[in-house]
Image (cartoon, rainbow, N blue to C red; front, side):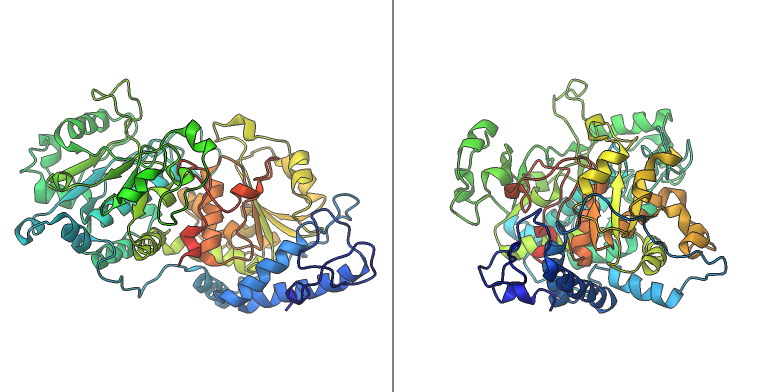
Amino acid sequence: SATEPWAKGWIWDQDATCWDPVGPDPPPVGQQPNECFFKYKSEVEAATKRVAETGCHDPDALEKMRKAEEEMKAMMAKRNVPPPTCRAEDPDAKPDLERAAAVQDCLSYWDEDWIPPPDTIGKVAMEKALGVSSEEASTPKYVFFDNDLGGFNNIRMAFEWVVSFAVITGRILVLPPPSGWYLINYGNMKVGGGHEGGVSHFSQFFDIDFLNETFAKYGTTILNFTEFVRREGESLNMPEDIMRDSGASFTEGKGDPRRKAFRDWGFDHFTRAPWSPFRGIICVPHCNDEWYKGTADQKEAQKMPRLPTPDTPTIWDRDGRPLEEYTRDNHTHTVLYFPDRPSKKKNDDGIEYRQFGQVAKAFWFETDAGTVEYHRLLRSVHFPALVYEIASRVVSYLGLFEYSSMHIRRNELQYKSAFVGAEASVENTAHLLRPNETLYIASDETEPGFFQPFRRRYCVYRFSDFLGPRGGNVLADVHVPANLLGPIEQVIMASGRLFIGTRLSTFSSFVNRLRGYIGTPDTSTWYHNGYTLSPGFRYTIGGGDWAREGRDLWETL
């Protein structure tokens, strides 16, 4: 093991000539390497190669890799780095499809054969907790929702929450009709959009067939909008233009007046669902009296210690949000509607309706088994196979866990304070990256020369390189749907040894979760734009912290 010196309790002594058994702690950050480091470095690199070639889902190998990488991060000098020596281009190169298929198998983290334990979450468990009669249990209950108004990853986060709500409450999930998605079908698109004026649907971005199979394991199902209208349109007195062909031709393109008209109709005729991950935590199946000991006041929360009861939501878990329940009365309504209407002033009830938020702390369960099942359920909301097939070609060329990656958000982000120049990003990340390292960069920056400071230190690859000889022609014969470019790049970035993202970007934060799902060597949160998490926040998140991912989403499985 490359981490054996730590296991034996050895520590790095800068003034000594080799390892001295001084204490159990690793070298302090920023300490300069002595002569023994270079021997140790070769051992680390050998371990890195072994894990990259054979580790895949082997938890022991990955744990060794994580420890080794922790010791590597602060060891490399920031300046006087020689120019990188990159792989030579081969105009006749062809992709290694067998290797790409093996990589894709490693990246497929979801559980196809998983059978949920009884009475954890799902239709039977919720109806039992609520005392629902067998007669009422046979009456279909639905969840209908609007997609989030934000970009793709905001839409994904809201979708994850609605999916979870439907499974936990045992309701049928109704997918909305195709509609215009921000930065996919309209907006100031710099890279990866679809086409102006088109519409998108959840089946384009997620494996809905697999998700429906998962729903069946929990006693419920997913319907498309047309099937929902066919079943319930008449009983719900839906508008005539939708009933005409059971909604088969109904879409909600941006600017189409029918979009607003139907959403207004749903807001007035369906039962508005009052829950949101921003506004509260839903107790499943009920709130325990002990759970109310925490405070919901933000200022008071900062003054209080963490509560001693392990099963009680801490002040950080609650993050100012009240505890809420899904009640017997809530269950009687045929359709619960989650609209996307974030303006309190424009809503007649003064409520902000938006489901985007931190899913890790959106529900609180009475049992550990319920929490684990919830986290496992979220893994079922994954991209379609095409995303992993394309990404695996790139990853197999770069080498699984053999490169680092970086997401630099420059245009399509409302938080302009997150923008920094390339030179600053290089300096901010020099202690994390190795000289001459292969670095994959995903960015919406359109200026060609912006990344030159990175190219002077690292072998930089962008997605377009893999369409030609510089990237081994691995995608030369592949049609890459423009609207899937974002998810494809997220998978590519998740598959390296280390990832550095942009603070306040949900695109970056999901890459970190994917890394946890895949089992990558390093699942820490690193930012290129000059922000470092304090030690107390590296392994925990608040309930309202939407820009980071909770480690328990993958570490509890």
